[in-house]
Length: 123
Image (cartoon, rainbow, N blue to C red; front, top):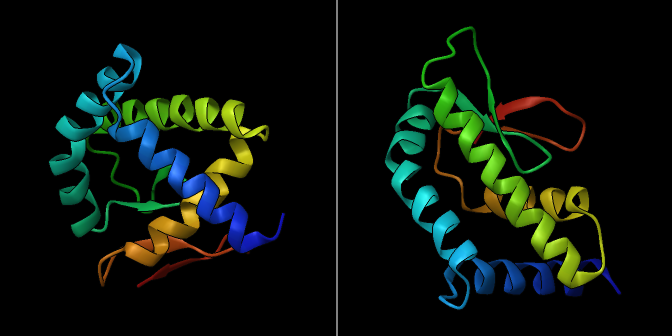
C-alpha cells in the first residue's frame, strides 16, 4: 500500500474511532481528550510543549507545568493508536508517526514540531 493511501486510511480510521459513539471506551477517551484540549492548546501557544515525530506531546523546554495533563494525553493517544493499529493490521508506532505528520500539517504558526530527524522547529 503506498504512503498516501495508507495515510488516508489511517486518518479515516482515526477520525472514525475518535468521533464514533459506538463504544463507551472510545467515548470515554474522546471526552477526556476534549476536556484537556484547552490546556494543551495553551501549553503549545506558550511554547512549553510540542508535537514530536511519534505523535505524542513532548516538553520542549525546561518548564514541565501540567505534566499530569501531558502524561494523560499521551496515554490516551497510545490507546487510540493501539486500537487503530489493531484494526489496520499495523503497529501503534506506525500509526503515531502517521498521526504526527497530520498534526504537523494542521499545526498553528509558532507551534513546536519535531521533524523526521528529531530536530525541533517552530512552524
